[in-house]
Each structure stands twice: as C-alpha cells, then as structure tokens.
Length: 185
Image (cartoon, rainbow, N blue to C red; front, side, top):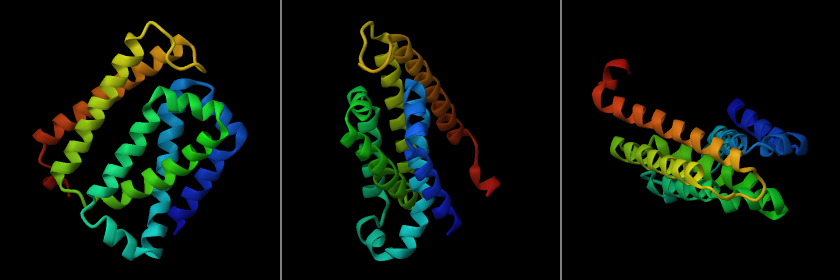
C-alpha cells in the first residue's frame, strides 16, 4: 500500500500550480517528463485499485488487451499538438489530463502488462517506436509553428527528443530478439 500512497503523493505534487506551470513552460518537459510522471503515479496507485476492485479488473481486462488499448488511446491523444495546446489554455482540458493520464492510462497499464503475452508486449513497443518516429518527423520537419504556446525551436527540440526515444526503444526491441531473458529470471 506504500506504492499507492507514493503514487497519490506524486499526483498531488504534479497538480500543484507552481509545479504544473514549471513543467508545462518547456515543451519537451511537458511531453516527455510531466505526462510520463502522471502515468507513473497511476501505475503506482493501481495496486490499491486492483485490491479494492478485483472483480472489475478480472471482468473487463482478463487478458490485458482492453487495458493496453485504453492506455494507447489515452497516451496517443496526449501526444497530439492540439491537446498539448489546449491543456495549457483551457482549464477543463488540463483537469482531464490530470485525471486521464493517471487513472485511464497508468492504472490500465499496470493491470494489463503482466497479462499480455510477449507478442503483445513487443507489439506495444513497436507501436511506440513508430509513434515517436512519426512525432519526430512531424516536429523536426515542420517549418511552421504547430503549437501556439511554444516556440518553433522548442518544437524541434521535442522532435529530437522523440527521435531519441524512438531509437532507444528500437534498440531495446532489437535486443529482445537476440538475448534469451529466461537465463536472467
């Protein structure tokens, strides 16, 4: 239960206006730090919900696929430039960000990941490699300002950060095929 408490503490810390404003002031920090930390807070709180509502998770997420699809949909939505812009300018969208990333992305991710087969886990990794690659091309290749709240140089920095994420994830996926992980378990 300590994990759930730490997850709630992290979420409360991330919601504080000075922290939220600081993390949202730089585009790459907003996307590659604040949003993953919100998912991690939900990931940490998930065990509490799994214990309190075991029937719910067993019924709707028995094989892990519905939960991972929900995670992918929520995460993909928040990778759109428009949603990042609206999170800064519209209070209701920001509230939705602080609810959706921990509770609709982090909790289903933790409940689903161990239930998924290796094939599905690799498919999720490949999806994220492709998504970060597309984001990199979008943000680096665009000569115009995509997000109204950020400068063009911040967009390009985010693009290079997304490209780095794609490369590192691709290296991880490739090593999965060459290393026998059963020797290390």
